[in-house]
Length: 302
Length: 297
Image (cartoon, rainbow over all chains, first blue to last red; front, side):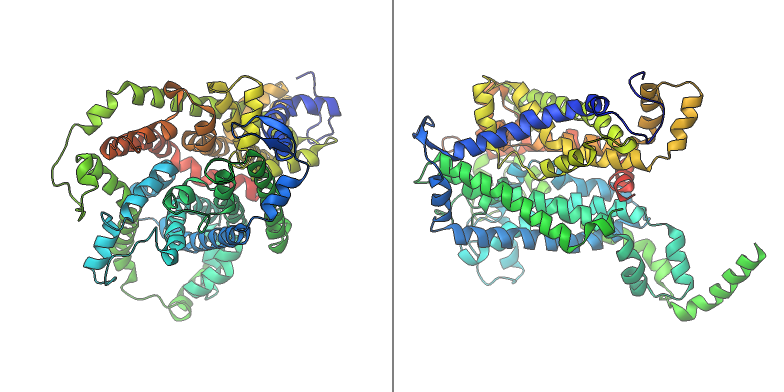
């Protein structure tokens, strides 16, 4: 109102801008930055089993995390989990978004159905899949043996060869709805005229897709992949629930590793868990920065 | 005009040669597309149909070996049992309260921030947008130790306020990002016209800009609501009072080491999906436009 001068797209004095931004700044400072500082402080402290601070630990918590014998496995699992889930999700979503962008009878209902895995709580979906994968009373084994795809039941969540692929399957399943919707939005932003013009110039369907649709879909693909990398990296319920039976860290990602350090391990160390949390935040920051650089995002989103 | 239609006619003649489409495709797609669509829908729904069938049988039958798709014994009253369970109703109430409040806060906070950064230049604009981008990468899960310590010190453990603020803060980035894109894509002239008509700045924002960014607002609402509705780790850590737990945390007590009510767990879970799917169905048409329309610009 009177606070602001009349020119649009004009300059604002710093203090006026602050009025507009202050609610957001307060929320970010109070509930994101402050806990982040608390996390670092916790990582620098020594704690009793009940969580009381007993003194300063210096950098020893960080060192203990770096020296942890399972750290290599955990990092390898994290890389496998993020890369596989995000890549498979994007590829399947590209196909499904293409299908759902076409007009057909019942499309609205199909779009609603696709939302369900997104709308359902991840913890419950994960618990449901632990039942479905189960060796004794899981329907998946029953179905695969019945169809002669498997000669005998497999212990999907206990057998070391199968645990990660099973987790990835569920990860992809719950990531698809969001990704499909982002790509659908991207597809709907491509004007029919462009496609029509290319068709008139004699482009075949595959050529049309490769040379027109995919490049124009790049901004949407970028948003979908960046957000998926962040979400999948930070995903807790699936890895934790599907892996609940297995001792140790053989199939943990860095997020569940962090949680177990505090609550489920022999270490039972809040300090180490906080140190692992700090590493996690730094890791995802670095990964996303590298990714954005590799795909040169400024070119794509302008 | 004539030139154009002439070119069209030429092109039309060339099309069958250049881009041969199977002759029967036009007719076949009327059946193939719905068939493919409904198969996809079935795959997405299949696990939840199993969940429904599991909700309609006694818990012992859920864990029977060998498993059967359909209940050996139907149990029709599970949903009635769950819906008349006071604990369940409390969790449901918490979830609705938390998700709705978080969403409201996100909107109130993100709209002015997105509008200001999209419309004005000022010192600190770019750093602010970068800060928002960075918070998008923080998850409450990796900060949970810090979050717990903060609210413990503030004596807010076990309060709705704590999880409402957490959900709002961690979903703010996405909303600012989406809305910033939308506001930037609206031509300045639109506002100037309103200006000339004597509209105040806030009046313009409220009456002109917000209606134009409806798809963006809807997208922000859906994302925040779902994220808050499904948030688990922070609620698990901060809410120890059973009556104040949200659904995601509360319903797990149907199946513990001591008592196993898989039927009730699944019935409760299905009930929990309903509000979100309804929300989606109501606003789906805005969502498709909203996810990238603004941010792509």
